[in-house]
Amino acid sequence: MNVDKDLEKEVLTRLLHAHPHGLGKEVLDNYRGEKVVASALAFLQDRGLIKDGHVTTDDAGEYALNLPIKLTASGVDEARKLESQTAQ
Image 1: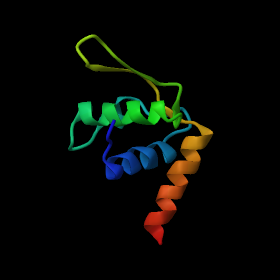
Image 2 (image 1 turned 120 degrees about the horizontal axis):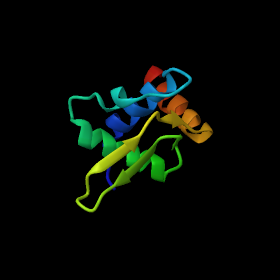
Image 3 (image 1 turned 90 degrees about the horizontal axis):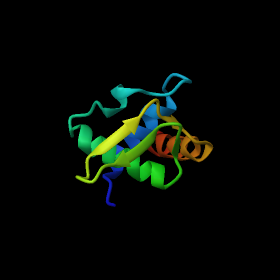
């Protein structure tokens, strides 16, 4: 799966700065569209960077989210790494 690195960074950063209970449907807010963000979340889930929320696909390939979504410890590390690269 090929995910836009800017979108990946945006999603990780939003989750890093989210409420401790995670993000709900607002995590999908992006000009690229909900399907693209859901695809990015599925990619992050496959890499073990998000937890609690589950991204699944149905037979038609449509994404379904079980919310809220939070970062794993690895996800926090990756988000902080990406955020520090921007600051430099």
